[in-house]
Image 1 (cartoon, helix red, strand yellow):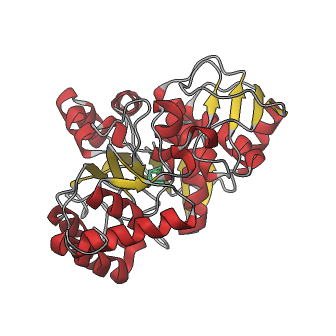
Image 2 (tube, rainbow, N blue to C red):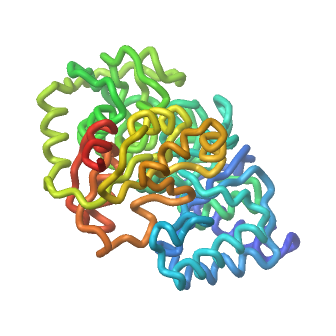
Image 3 (cartoon, protein in one colour):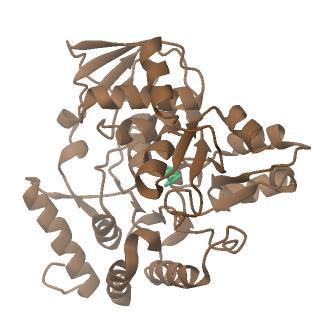
Length: 380
Ligand code: F3S
């Protein structure tokens, strides 16, 4: 592969993987079961990224199941989201390059809801931080937090260097985060991720004191903990499937810690734009949102991020119609962070702690951090 016997795209891919493996001291390359490619929005890629994709697509074809992270727009309904036509043209070129590589061009940060769901113990090469953390922690698959080029390299070779979170010795907890606070909805799991991530500073927590957590709660925690400074893996006693040694260091997370984190993620009362579905919604979440919006009419711009195959099921079940009849917009393939929204809105309300961090950092939004129910109240 490195000598170019399998074509130029594979040669370049192997150069990337070999360089990574050498830097991190990997002893060998291992096969991966699936890939999730990050770096899909033209807003992040720019023309240089598009050019790189064009080169890789000349003779590169995927070797394993591969899906894409969200793009900068809804690939079908971009006009309704107010996306500039020139941006749309470039974003389509990005997706076409991936199509030439035979990637499944469904753009989502919850690939595990749409059939890219690894089994416990599978080695994978995923790129998007919340999906990586969910895969490692909740599904028990094994992946590093890959960058855009290395995910493409793994897709075109079916391989990844064996280091980091592929090795069990690097997946052990470093400290216990004992929760003495009420954590019972995705927003509060996001706030918990904020608190524990900041304590962790790259280390791995074993979280205790949580009695139950839904898929949506774990999705929110996965997105938040890695955003605020944790490693892309956590353990929750009695809930997550990985085995870990029990560390000696113990930190208590209090109700006050959670309330302070919530307070810190609010810096305005003036909401212009509301985004739900960060990470992209499950079908269950769309059902709940449709119930909350039933018969209502939204007065503010409200987007709901979702993978297109989940929206299709929601269409059949009637949830989409209820949501769209209210004036809210189902935003497939994209989100408030990777879409080109800087300057278009000045403030955002969301139930996602990750969404707050990147909404501030990338798009300069003032932020309102509330539950799903409260966000919808703000919208109507
Ligand atoms: Fe997904 Fe965008 Fe949030 S990629 S995790 S919806 S910031």
